[in-house]
Length: 410
Image 1 (cartoon, rainbow, N blue to C red):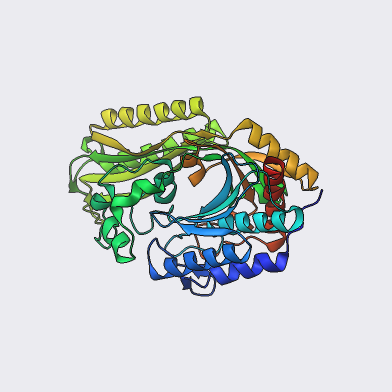
Image 2 (image 1 turned 30 degrees about the vertical axis):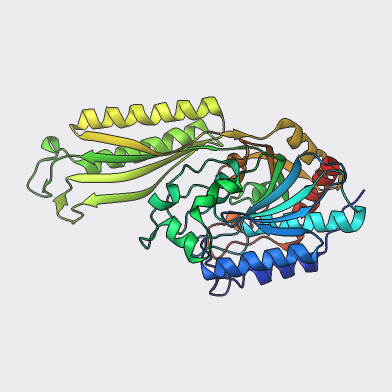
């Protein structure tokens, strides 16, 4: 049983959706509830109706395309987010919702009505590109994890609230709880890999068996500001020297632990930040990730011990808080097997790997069984206007997704 996916349809959907928020030749700037976002969600809904699905928008603007099953029961859902980075590319998020629609459309055309209901979803937001603390706004509404009053308190980069943005396009923040679902059995998400593992391994597709655990430490090292030439090295309390040692140390720890452990220092602020001054303070963020529940705790403990030791030895004051702390999300073993079997049945070699990035799947895991399919990214690029996946690789990924949905729903 071979699933047939039309490459021309795939390319047309990708290119037409990318027009909403087009930025330069290949980029896309489409933040939640923006005019570009409105246009994209309307287009996705129109494509759902065109494919014979029933389209609807929920209370936060997630778009659902539903193919009703003959036997009832909880739904089999696939999709991803429709918003982008500022700017992002054509594939991150968008490819997953288009893949879900194309897979369901192909199954309907080739095999008719399923026994179990199939749904394609375009999550309204995942990237935090308009509101820095959204944290999976679309999928969090579906799982019921948005606390009352959150939309009123949440401030965006332009100083507006999430509630303001919702009301501006006709959504009522008081109705956010209406988006909650308790009738989803399975969630499958196709996504570009966002890294180089598939390309290095020579694979088009991967089955994701875990989504990484993630912790952000916001660290402040405080020392004593002094003259860069007149103050002896052995008498300094230099927070920049302490930062340099900590940065090298935490990165070395992750390197020695080996794949898939990763640690990044992506943000540093130095005060006063002048060439002839020993700084008085350094603020920085440590991003530490590991998909194994036990190994991630070991890595966090090593990072924290190093920070304390360096600060004490150098006579520095150190403070930190944990700004983000996501538990690892293990894919459902049965779904992993279903996807692996689907790849084999379609004659598509697929590796099995963890995801180093966060995804809506980890939020959806609180109400449904989840697993993911990765599609190869050229040069491992993502969150950039240069991100690219070939139509050939994308079609392979959609065939795996569709074959798994066929095994679950028909």
